[in-house]
Image (cartoon, rainbow, N blue to C red; front, side):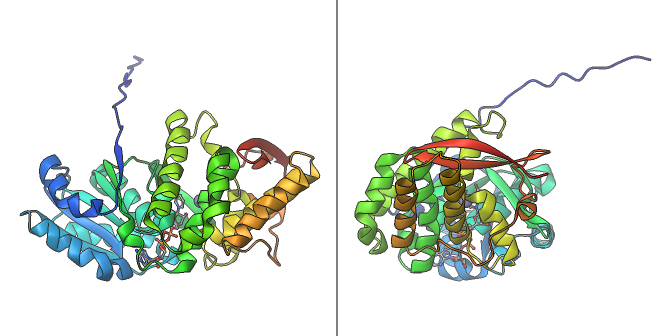
Length: 349
Ligand SMILES: NC(=O)c1ccc[n+]([C@@H]2O[C@H](COP(=O)([O-])OP(=O)(O)OC[C@H]3O[C@@H](n4cnc5c(N)ncnc54)[C@H](O)[C@@H]3O)[C@@H](O)[C@H]2O)c1
Ligand SMILES: [Zn+2]
């Protein structure tokens, strides 16, 4: 017998720019012309975003002499599944999309996660760019390369870590974003503040009115600060191996279970808001956080119009679909004080 070793040690530089600027989306056609990420582009989006922004993006790309096609699916978390991926991939094949082409993920986090996943696996992988259109997608889901879809058994259980080529964050997209969706994204911004950025936390406390008025400067500040927080963590632990990335999971252990239990009707940000409060309850019980600090977090979530209670608190057994669990433990991220979090392991069997 002969053993043959296939040595594969190369690691490519996957660094990319996250461009945050009011009006930056107008520069996408020029960017595509200059950077030639693909020969043509599949604009993956949901039915709502297709109508609001997809058609005009397609037109502006065409004006630069570049071909694109829109591929859309029904909006909402309910579409974040494998059959949507299969349907989109089949349509792309039918329209002649090959490995030379690329994807533009235009929309909220559902679109970004699904389109990024499709880019990662379509003909073994093609490049993609993110154009987030919700606050949730701008502050969180478009950064860091996590892609994927849900299974009946739980959220995001199928997926990859595949980085985009560039992210275009343009607050002009937020003009008509419903208040409910602002609150949704704000839950993640409050999360960044609570786990690692006291200044951001205070800023939200003091500027909540301006956020809901969609004041440009205020929105740009919370988005940029959130992106910086996420980048700092992902940089240290891109593949979720060294343990830093798990801190982003504050509120998510309970949150994901709540989403699943609601049949994915409860918005992600709303679910993690309740999840953060439930995590704080554990932290108070274990003496990790002072009750008054837990109250401060709850008060900010309330001020942001987010829910802080549930009639159906997930039991330990409901949490075991979570990817972050270990054989006998579930990992909770608990906030110690504003801007500082710790990992806490709880036995589930
Ligand atoms: N990959 C990651 O790291 C990561 C991080 C956080 C969240 N997520 C995922 O993101 C998803 C949630 O994202 P979301 O809240 O953006 O959901 P979403 O994509 O469903 O968008 C919410 C709704 O807003 C609409 N919409 C989008 N842009 C709009 C605009 N500019 N104006 C008006 N309406 C608009 C959409 O049609 C949709 O109905 C969840 O699946 C969550 O798991 C992923
Ligand atoms: Zn989240």
